Image (tube, rainbow, N blue to C red; front, side, top):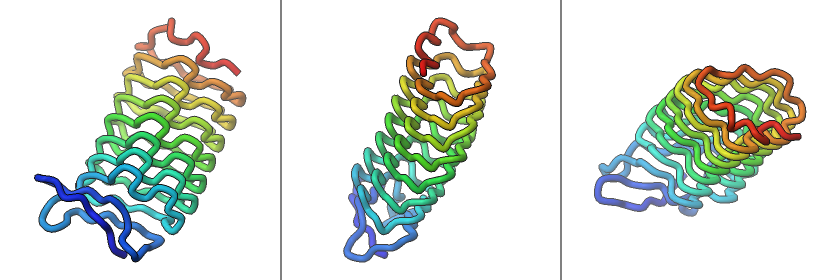
Length: 208
């Protein structure tokens, strides 16, 4: 397997495959003496070969649409140290089933995992502060979400149309759930609220 890189002053970024490809994509820790810190925008967009991605220890950010529409991607192994999962990074990766977000992640950007319809297990490591617009919308196989302590904001329509979602638990750190965050979650049966929430934000949150 060969990878192509962008070289910056203090780091390197992966921008895609060269002519050789692999089912298991392992992002190295370094390239030519520089830490590999980013996956470039659209680096592996619609790449049907990849089934598993293993991030190197120095990755800090995934670029916009970096793995979007990778139709055979089943497994993601994030590194402890990644800070941001970018816009539409894994959008419409329909075979991913389990997602573990490390405690170093501070923000999941808009549409990061939208239309990942087979995700049935989602765990947060505890350092995340914000979940963006439509970040997990149309993840119809999700049945339960326990948000880790530390999160403050769940964005507009973040979990909309998660039709299998039955149970939610919010931590004390959570302050804002934006409008339509859980719109059309028609199977929702149980919600455990936190003490820190601002009540006015619940308008249209649960609309079916």
